[in-house]
Image (cartoon, rainbow, N blue to C red; front, side, top):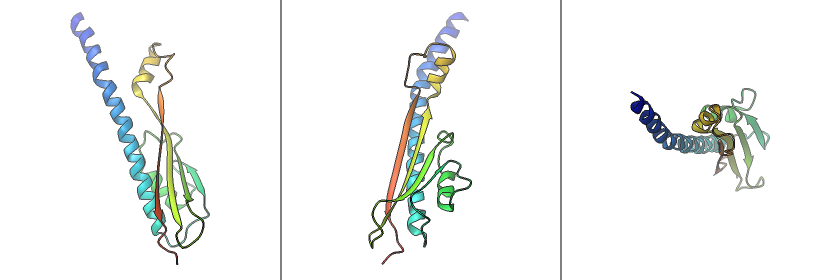
Length: 141
């Protein structure tokens, strides 16, 4: 029973570390997809709001574009994810809109280590995830 407990804890640690990094990668992919979808919605809207526009998720009081983008991001980024809609070029016939999502992913494994007092010296408990997408605004010239 003691051997099983020691080996089981080691196996959980060995299995959880790659899973945690995989979840961080997946969260980055969801942020990338949300930025691309938000840029597509902004490119198709007939009237752009006053730009640049920024909100912190869940963006309840922001424009419809930012609210729809906030619905598409991962809940792992939600405590403080920032969504920004801006123009990449001046207001000409080739105006682009850029949707940027920035958030912090907290690794569960490092939080677990800190709970046990092991990982206090580790500064890698989180990673900043920033994804952006730029598209040409369709309703011009």
